[in-house]
Amino acid sequence: MSRSGTEIIIGTRGSELALVQATTTEGLLSAKFSEISISRQIIKTTGDRRTDVSLANVAKAEGTFDKGVFIKELEEALADGSVDIAVHSLKDMPTVIDDRFELAATLERAPVRDVLLTKQAGGLSALKAGAKVGTSSVRRAKQIEFLRPDLVLVDLRGNVPTRIEKLAQGDDYDAILLAEAGLVRLGFISEFPESDEEIVAASAPVFCTRLAEDIFFPAAGQGAIGLEIRKGDARSLDIARSIGHAETWIKITAEREFLRLLDGGCHTPVGVYSHLTDSQIHLHARVFPETGGKPKIGSATDSDPIQAALKLFQSLK
Image 1 (spheres, one colour):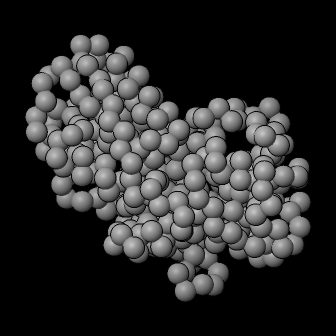
Image 2 (tube, rainbow, N blue to C red):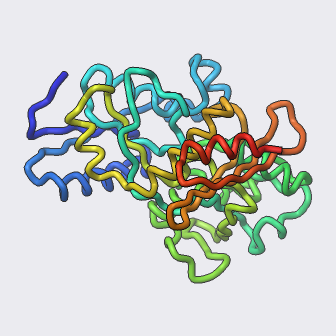
């Protein structure tokens, strides 16, 4: 379905974070294309509907990958022409995308770290043995097990504000893990912290500790907003790329290629992060075997993101 040159429709999930990301995208498009009318279609995904069970069980029930539960319906809207650009949290996207679609661009990346929210000050080291830590991410769970095997992992679902309130008000969690990017975008914490530990606004005090990337490895693509289009839609491709961020694109290209080489985009618990120095991209990874055991670690540097990913894959030990 082709659209006139004066209209474009953005597709997004309906969570508070997704709507903030859609608003950011729309703002960039409006500044770039004042002549184009931009509208929004909110789409409820399988992952949004099924918050009663873990993501892994939702995926099994729906016959899709873990990450696919947050993009399936958005891709269906792309396929039937209901929307022109789907806005995603990039870490929710599978490494290999359906041949009918393509990742056209990424916006400038927000902070990539994971954040530990606790009821008591002191961060990870202050949690008592047996403390209950909530997360829906296998990657985060595996890293907690690696760093603090004495803690208890508990499944945690819901949008960001809901998860924070579950910690603040209930007894099911002593701590929870979230992405720094989401907390910054929703205004719970500032992008540039004034202290090592902050208090998050909630119905009861919640303390925030940002976990350094080299201690608690983020997900590939974490903090990035991805713009997905129909493959072959030249107009949407040009529009999306016009607001893309080149440095972020280099980083996520390397990170996602590494996942592809691992064949671990959806199930294998993988932490990977990158940084650029001059013309070089530096990659670091921690990969947990699905069967359990100690993680493999690796690092690599190259001027080409694809070659850097290959070197990182080959460096795992």
